[in-house]
Image (cartoon, rainbow, N blue to C red):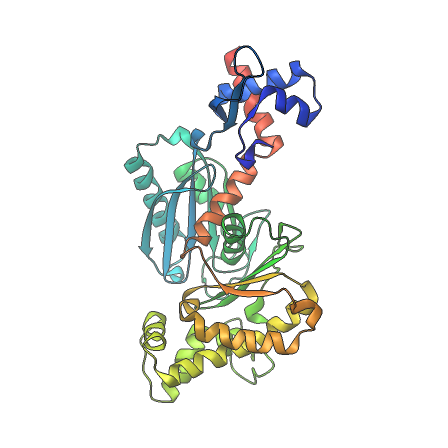
Length: 381
């Protein structure tokens, strides 16, 4: 209840929870001792001394959130509300394997904590997003197409050994969906987040909650067969996948065949922003290909918001134009009447915010808080 950020008095908590005053008082005292609640001014007096108001204290701990991509990583230190305190960008190659990449993430996390003057005991947990399928219950990648050497690797164990605290791992796009939802669209019940970069993936928020599926494989949009995929080879071993014809590398290959050389996705985006007509047309066609698959998703899931993120989304006017053209044209009016298809508004921070949010949702769950309070009580005795 107190995680909504609204300061409340003890009397208001009694009224809202229906619990006895003594029960609420004991719980509030325990949360104050643990640092999870803090005084927040005084409420208006109805006679006598004004009652103290209490609020959730996001500074009671810190969280490390990491967003690992194919060629880069962003590591951030956040408070318990997901507010970014500091961050560090890393140039990595996920194909180097889990050891070097995770060591670099851990080193960056320690440097951020040292720079902020935060002790290791203040670390509530670590969240990390990886660019491939992850079995969420174990935190282990499962046959990730672009991550050689990572299959079934114990990512939580590796990071916990270096940083401590609980370590939670998920697919990067799931966490981007969680981050965008938490910061920009908290009131939206049904949202799709589409990442278009080296690969293509989707994060699904349904009923206000992240939907991972039975094994954590929900949202693997890039490896759905594209209507115009033909025989194009894909990194997953199949042919004709959406990723093979509409991802950033696929657009680069198409342009190279036309004599337009762009060394990487950032250069591609720059050409699109500079008004290169052929680049813009190629990016828009990639958007159409994505839209053809998304039209099916819209009919199946009926989201109210589709957010497009990733490097390619920075050429948003062309990519979104192609996506909108197909989705609005092919889906039923009932599903698209109020549908927004928009570019990400988190400025590249959706992944680390989502990683931190995943951790805070875990450590601030009722069971975990009960355990923390029980340990605190035992220590006090």
